[in-house]
Image (tube, rainbow, N blue to C red; front, side, top):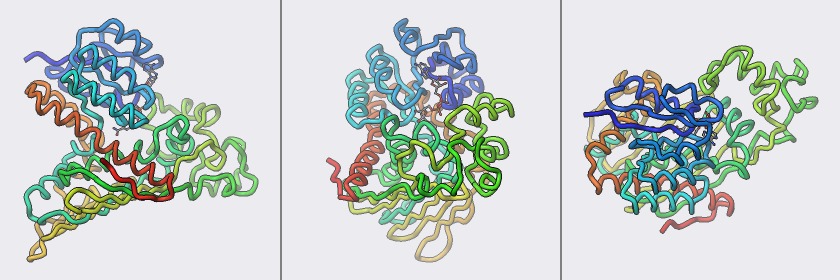
Length: 403
Ligand SMILES: NC(=O)c1ccc[n+]([C@@H]2O[C@H](COP(=O)([O-])OP(=O)(O)OC[C@H]3O[C@@H](n4cnc5c(N)ncnc54)[C@H](O)[C@@H]3O)[C@@H](O)[C@H]2O)c1
């Protein structure tokens, strides 16, 4: 069977992550065009454009449009691409506003097209393994889930204090941008809908009044005596520490130095235009009465998700590398995670990036309208929970009912 054809709109970190699948499996997927004003050349393809509009205006022959541009460039190209008859691999969030999210999903359903949103976690072997344990019935019915996204002190500063997700005027709420993956997991694991939500969260640390005395607006100007003790000094984060380099196509010493000197990433973390919380907790009630608590916090030394799922007959406790499953009637079902399932042992979001593309290709080849409609509709659930959580947080934790 011939490879399915895809166009990529946005050749940044996510565009490259999904396009790499075509390089690894050319018999299954072919990238026939790439649009990006800055780095279209980072993905091999016969056609290139500098803007998504020019690309879609030509209606290139393809099955799939991958939309991997910034959050505010999802909604309009999604509607145009669906109208033109393409299926979408659409990065999360569908859009920064709930009305636009609903509009995209409604358009896909009207056109009978698939929208697969980049909820990569459910495609990792680790989280899929948890789903299989729940579905096996070994721990009975799920009653509570306690989950924490430990965002990592460096990641929160990079993206949500200095970076493009830091200001709510320009970006999606952090609880959508960072945690739609987690809400997607809860709804998927439980197999039902969330009905009520309450949430609290604020900026605990990254405020001007918490800056050390004498700290300057940019790290490059800050006295060495202050920088030495600052965890978030841009020199440490972008020169000494490898954790953020993979986000940049050019992570050479010179490029990182320029970034610190000239870009928003060189700003002092206490003197940015950030207004999104650095920690937020959400309480949810699902159909049937199961309750879930989810905490997102930027104050962690590891970038992991920890999960505790209590069922009527047993429990699951895991952190991506260790998984304990116990039945209350005696005997551990399993302890430890098979090495191939460990998040840290599998590259590209724990294998989720490639598995998501593979799942999209499987669904399109099968071409079952009911499946296409169901998968498309499911993508909205995580977003609806996130928007409800943000409404609750802004109303001081008031309970928000979801229709
Ligand atoms: N699923 C996940 O786990 C995950 C992780 C990170 C980011 N994301 C989401 O993926 C999306 C992309 O994030 P990223 O980290 O790849 O960002 P990025 O900045 O690395 O890439 C975005 C690309 O879009 C390009 N672009 C901007 N305007 C354009 C236009 N008019 N036409 C064509 N291209 C244009 C930019 O030049 C850039 O190369 C965002 O919506 C983000 O929220 C998802």
